[in-house]
Length: 162
Image (cartoon, rainbow, N blue to C red; front, side, top):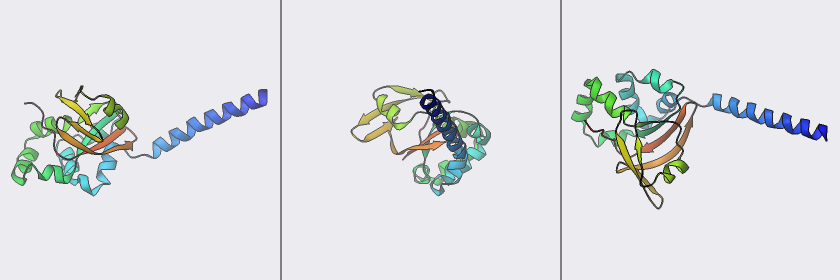
């Protein structure tokens, strides 16, 4: 009996160590974004706002990441103007970040509730069948696991209250 217990204890400990090793292999949020060509505008914005170190930090963070196509909806002139205004850019980017690692299953449970971002703006979560929106912006891909949190891809840029 003692041998079975000891083997079970070893298996549990090894599994814990393996999970930690796997987690260590994951990229940070910034590394994951840099490695995805659909986030090149987001990466440029994060660099311009000096948020790389923050989003590479321990977290955990949940990032609702707009694609390049989402940024394109703002128009080239708007993007260029915001990239030059670090305060506004930082406000917009931090409005896409929530404290904690919130997986898709947790977001679905938040239907009808509001989530508060690092910037201080709250966005309403709405779940309609398979469609989830945050502040009216559609979540198009979920649960990109990172060492310091998770990324959910969205189809538009969330605009914080001024």
